Amino acid sequence: MWTSEPFSAETVLSGRSRLRLNITSDQPDADVFADLYEALPDGSVIFLAHTQLRLRYRGGGVDGIPLTPGKSERIELPPFNFFARAIGKGSRIRLVIDNGPQFGWQRNSHTGGNLATEPASAGRVGKLTIATGPDSGSVLELSRPDPAVVK
Image 1: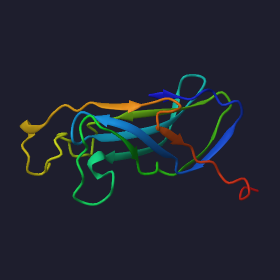
Image 2 (image 1 turned 45 degrees about the horizontal axis):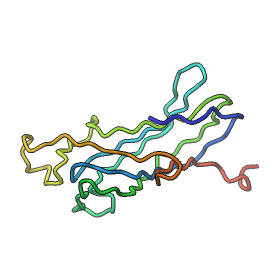
Image 3 (image 1 turned 135 degrees about the vertical axis):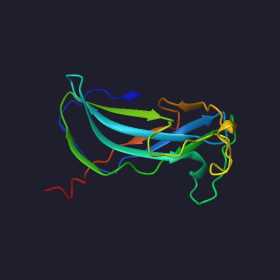
């Protein structure tokens, strides 16, 4: 979980925010789920948007490419769902990243194998490490409306 500094003024966010993560996995496959929230000064949160990716499909295509365990990769998740909200003064943006399992998604065995034919007993526990900090390569880009378009 990452939480921003409090906003010093009301700020409008609108569009499809983007997330790039520098990830190292100890298994050939994993899932990444990311949620954005507005964290209000009173401690409550408001859901803003969601994105998700099965990492074997990070390059697109239907066959998928397994991760190389232990090798760091820069992964771009699909854009978050569209949202528009005026983030209040004193509120923060909260990013929550999870690697599942999640309701509605086929459970990932983390082997990189065929999930439809592989027995459940082949499943492994996967560990993801996400690099954070200014020089990590991990970036959350929040969507702001173009001031030239907003009248």
